[in-house]
Image (cartoon, rainbow, N blue to C red; front, top):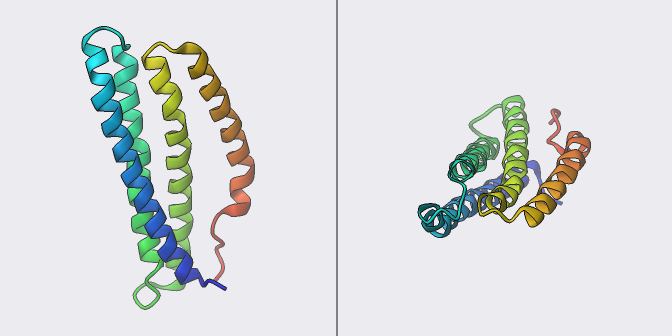
Length: 144
């Protein structure tokens, strides 16, 4: 059975991978949509909003990974502080995942593909409701 320390270490690795993924998606969005912006095929305000929205999951995942890393250091940080760091990391991870899942609809709205954008947005709303109902049972416990 995995220990809390093993879980914290695994969370560091997973969250850093997600941060790298969001940066790759940001780069992909910029490389492929920026030329469309210049030709008038993309909505300039939505394009900029999409790029700004990409910063939120990237930031959330990097800070969550930092907090999970701190939670994986049993010899340096007290147990109650480590538990608090894990809970904060969980919340930032959820924020990053939620905003990351919003991005496809924003990208589709930006290039004026409204039907698939609305489908993605509807799925995002379903996820948002699911996450809000489920997350309190899933986040790290406050006890040791």
